Length: 599
Image (tube, rainbow, N blue to C red; front, side, top):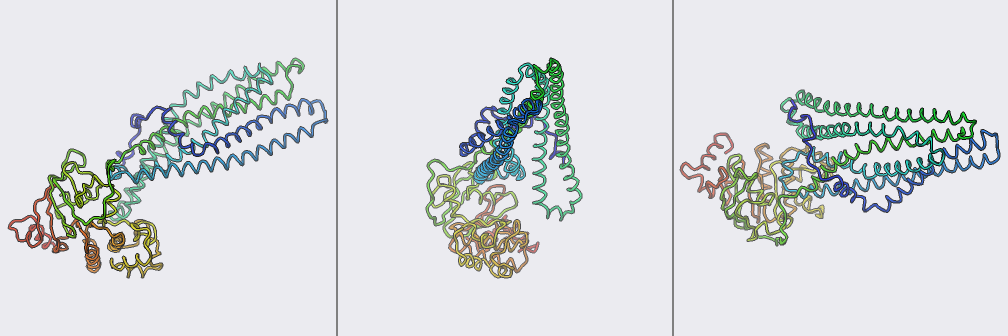
């Protein structure tokens, strides 16, 4: 079932990470814009901790100086001080919670903005290689982990360290002997922590890795739901889902079981410290109360509890930090991924082009091992319509992708109006190339905004004009909200032909000088096909157009037909020339499609 997808994770599978100090230093750079607010928040934490640790001290005075000796004098003022302290602490906790949440949300927004900005700049190679679910995990799970560490966890560390220092100082001030006795249990607590740390870390790492794999599986299955239903794979995929989901649950339960043992062991050391201190205190109380008072004992017991809470939290901090470093490593690995296609330092803005395109001895390989294009030479004059023909894998889409510079050639060069595409900025090149894909992508937005996607400032009149030229105005007006209709995910409420017409309207409005059309009409009815072909004709007027042809009957009027086979140009010419070549490859393809009813 999912043997390959959800295989068990070992630490050897984890990507090599940079040193802890280097990762933490990089992580803390996200706090720089908020350092003033963070310092203010930590100051409030310090005030609240100090006030909280004064409660047992006040209780001691109330018991020893008033309750035990039945002395009402000064009791109410001291009680008022305690009440004011509680009120100040409550107000401080409220303010610090609000501040830390504002900082937390700010850091999360900054981190996700940086990730998104980086991801949209990455080349096609990355997006073809990386599963969507894995990338989404970086935005959601890992980003949340880093954000929580930088705000809540770091604030808690400062809170616990400060609390521990204050408590120890007060305990030594009250009774140094009992303090030393209480600290005898700390080495045992340290040993427990050292034993549990790697096991908890490994457990959480397995949880994260299996969660990532589950996200990948879930994203693919939701996106491919139509295929699942078309092939009646519901039961099979449900079984696979249950297996992937159960692996996550199993790893979670392993970690929870470890923590279930860890917490009682920490509690056991605290209880043992209390028992030992009570035993020693009983001896001191037995001296007639001269050495140790009841109020002092009550305060001391409270301080032991207050000391153990931050100690147990700090023992867990290693696990939290390791989990954070693992997430940081994955996020930084993504941020450090460099685009394979970049602008050269001397790249210029491509001026408005006429549309001359030259492929000059172009070679290309996706993996530097298997050649996809070999010595392709092709000259396209401005305003020409050129059709790329050939079997699947012959290199048609690759030629179109190289022109848009989604990839860089591995040999030769491509020029547009004499400019090597590697010598101009990607933005200035692609802004003058309109691409209509075989499977047009419709965003979850209004129809109007989908059409103006490449020209965001276009007026409504311009949008409507483009829609009319693309033959999609009529069906848009039949929708309940017309151009303000919100498209569902990927435009699923529209037929593939309607989505194609919308993408053509989008291309018309962006007014490119060069068009790349993945002309796919085999999946639409005859009427819609006629509308699409008419829209294509409108779109290609006065523009250089490269059409990846699927139906040969639709490219009879092409100025040049480039017949590709195994990455090489096999034949070149117009329809009349090629179709009459004896034993010609193109002529054979035309006859084959005609016999299949596509001629």
